Length: 200
Image 1 (cartoon, helix red, strand yellow):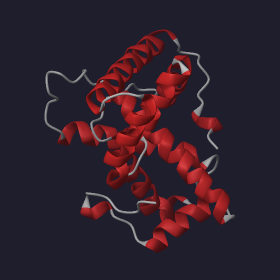
Image 2 (cartoon, helix red, strand yellow):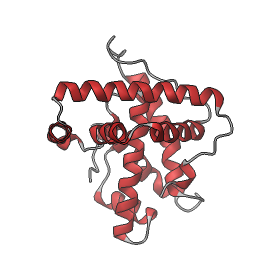
Image 3 (cartoon, helix red, strand yellow):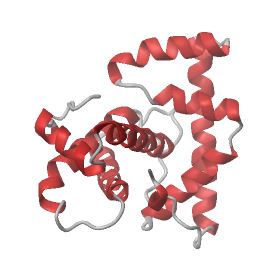
Image 4 (tube, one colour):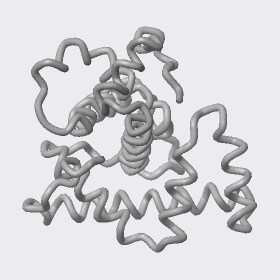
């Protein structure tokens, strides 16, 4: 599990990481499962937003929560995973301010709405509309750690019978469709029940 970040001020210690796991669950094994589930969902959120670095932003979000934990642990109520949603929204805004304009070939960014939890519910709904093949492709394409990314994508391409370039193009097209779906959902789904509350 990656407990470091390319942002030096956002790196965390093993002690901070252990405290985060304990906050997620008292049982170490269950905490690890919940950590992986939260990380994968964060990656999906940043993928849908059009981030070029969804894994890094997911790790940065987790590190920020770990750093903030001593301040909020005693007073925060509810499902811990919900807290990651708000932090992810802030991280995404930061990434937009810091990043250069995207290349002309990259689909445009989706603006972050006021009701972030509704947006995440829309994302879950849109991912559910993908075929099993597309869902497996786009989630597998973006979910690995940075140092495992190249090898993982090569293996994924081999498993799906695709070249690396074809895999990248398909992932990009699926991501663009997800963004379009989320935009449509956001315009007409004001009463969608958020699924952030059911994170496990």
